[in-house]
Amino acid sequence: MSAPRPVRDGVLRFLLRGASVRGEVVVLDRAWREVIARHALPEPVRDRLGELSAAAALLGATLKFDGSLVLQIHGDGPVALFVVEYRSDGAYRATAKLREGASIPQDAPLPALVDAQGRGRFVVTLDPRESAPDKPTWQGIVPFEGATVAGVLERYMQRSEQVPTRLWLAADGERAVGLLLQRLPDEAGEPQADADGWNRMQQLADTVAPEELLTLPADELLRRLFWQESLYAFDHRPCRFACRCTREKVGDMLRMLGSDEVEAILAERGEVEVHCEYCNQAYRFDLVDSLALFHSLAPAPEGDPTRH
Figure 1: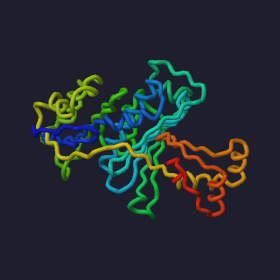
Figure 2: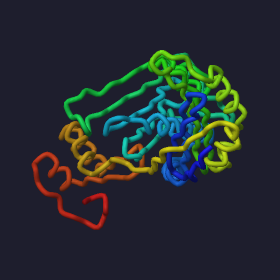
Figure 3: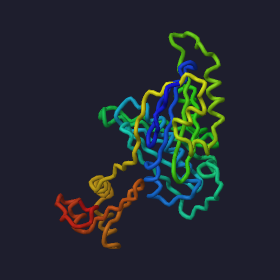
C-alpha cells in the first residue's frame, strides 16, 4: 500500500489494483465553511448540501473537459432546490433554496425535505462550453429515488453510466467528506484476477461510520479501510470555493428583465438590489447605473466595491 498524501480541500484518487477498483476520497474544510458562512441553513439542509457538495467534487474530479458539472435536487417539500456547481479547475459553489415559511424538523431525512409529495427530481448537467463553445450542454433528469444523497447518486449512476458505483458521504458545520468506489471494467473481456474484489471493497467501506469520515484524515481513513489491500494513491486535485457572479452579469440579467420593470423597482425603492444566491454578494444599481444599462452610459464609480 503506497502512502496516501494528506488531503485538505481536495480530491485524492487511488486504485485498489488487485481488486480492479478505483476510488476517490474528498475532504472539503475551508471550502465548505466558505459556503455555509454565506447561508443561514437549518442543520438537516446544511448537512445534505454538504453531502451533495462532496459528491459533486468526487464526480467532477474526472471531468475530461474544461467546464462545469452541476448537481441539482428539485424538491416539492420545504426545500425547493439544492444545487452544487463544480468546475474542472476545482472551483465550486453551492446553495439551497427554502420555501417561505418552511418548518424543518431537526431530524428531517432527505425525502421529507425534497420529496414530500413524490414529485422531487434529480438533475445532472454537464456544460463543456468553456473549452468547446459550440458543444451543447448535456442534461439528465431522473425521478428522485433514494433515502440519502449517496443513494440518489448511486441509482443515477446505475441508470445512466451503468458503472457499478458506491458512495459514502457525510457533512456537518466544519467539513464535507466523501468516499467513492467504482468497479473497473474487465480488460479485453478477460475475467478479473480477484473475482470477489468488488464485493470485498464494498464490504470494507461499509464499515466506515459518518463520524470517522468527518474526523479521520483521508490518509488514515484509507489505511483503516484498506490496510490489507494493494492501494496506490496517484492523484490529488485541490478544491476551493469560488463564485462566478459579477456586476456585469447582474447587469445583463437586469437588461433581460427590461427597462420598464427596472424603472418600476427604482420608483418604489430608489435602487435595485440583487443578491447572488451562491455567495450572497449584494449588487446595487441606482438611477444613474440603471440608465447606463439601457443607454450605454458609463456609471460613475463610488466607494461601494459592488459598483465597480
